[in-house]
Image (cartoon, rainbow, N blue to C red; front, top):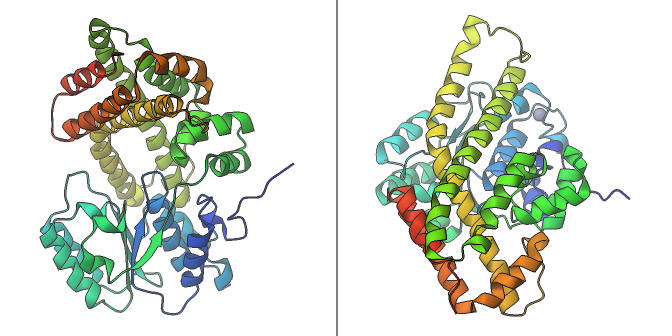
Length: 392
Ligand SMILES: [Zn+2]
């Protein structure tokens, strides 16, 4: 029996946003209007697809399909160049730094004054809009209040509370939710042809993060690394073991960072070449080389952050494991994130109390904070692992 995706009724660019049909319906309608709202705020927890939604909306707004109801076809040159990040009228900003500064925002506003080069609109997608300083936000606010005629702003943040109220009140809000594991599994099965059982395992394990789920479901080494990470608390019986495991954890996350960066960089390169009308083996003609060079620069900047990101992903996996432990200790019969480890989780849960589990979750949160403030990873991880040692 084939189940149909809830978003299958909409044009192709929306199909990744499974479980979000209410938001997709709003955006699809707006993309067909003569004068859509010029400032949007996309909110939703990590993995809910807020930047995916913003990019899809940019594609739908600019798409060349003559039938407005089909905008967001995913196959016209405009849809393709937006997907590969080379469209001159769609700028996506993701900061590698902790904050967007006032100068960066001023530069953007300068660019926003230009008319679109080729498309209907000039679109600015700002990932992590919650990382703007208050001064930078106020500068942006002016631009949003007095919009140049064909400019559309799309800001992304975890929740409306993460941006200043002045921004909140001047933007139209799209709230994304975490899709169910079942709908993520369905997407992976129908779109990527993955085995349904594997897809469901990966969807649960990734806590419904579509990108991570696909990576896990299609990559046995990534699954093996995740398994080592989540089973870590189950192995840590003593302080000395905790110390030994710290080095291992860091090594595993480094391997994960390298592997996932390679996979993503290759996929982006293929997509870029495709949008330039080239295949993977073609030599890039000199006049197109600047596109490839720009992508390579972006990738280098991002690779620097990928170790930190992989370590953070490991911490989220560990929080998931302790949530499972807590569920067992509190006697709820909820589906576990790590259902396949149920027996070991029950065993571990019996060795400690729910207070101990909450303390472990706290310790992970603290380690994540420390990692963003430049504490050496080894120290942050060791301190965290000590909180995993079972205590009655
Ligand atoms: Zn299109």
